Image (tube, rainbow, N blue to C red; front, side, top):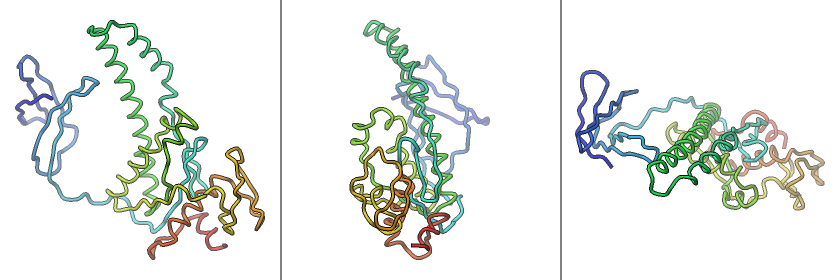
Length: 271
């Protein structure tokens, strides 16, 4: 960690000096700092970048997204990142898969460098920066998707995820899609915008339960993408049916004024 004095000149450019006073680092303020600054910490990360971290006191943020009174259920998957109870199918980028060849080359380059050498440190830094770029691409998609969902809905209903078990079944793709990190971002945006994320028990058989009559098809396999209910004859898309069940389960004790939206509302009225 670097601990250094700082000052703010008239222009929006700050200068930081390292303890040995041999280097100056120029910092351009890209946006105003809101609130009263309490502490300033300067750090260097594994990529070699310097970060100025401000701790401030400020009023809670004012929500920017409109209130809609709508709720939606989400089903996570590998073919479709999300299927909503309204019938929307959302695809997600796979930044690691797209950059896999480059990442493998960087790993090979690192393995060829002598341990403790400056060349090895440089190779390691290039690899870390590539992983940082991949992570930033994933987070950018997650934040944009979370805000898009909360611009349409006040309540987003999801299942608790057993990410460890999912990784055992499907491996690297689960990490590349970033289900767990998306849920954290979804909760963060919900708190900031005065919205809500509701979770249901991971053991609830959302895919096996008919969203029309609640009959359970216990022999449903992972390979079956559609199935017909033996009780009422409804033909179900596996993921859409699961999303509707997640919504109904989460709203079973919902407050007044929150309603399913779109196709999910039509299903609720007809059942």
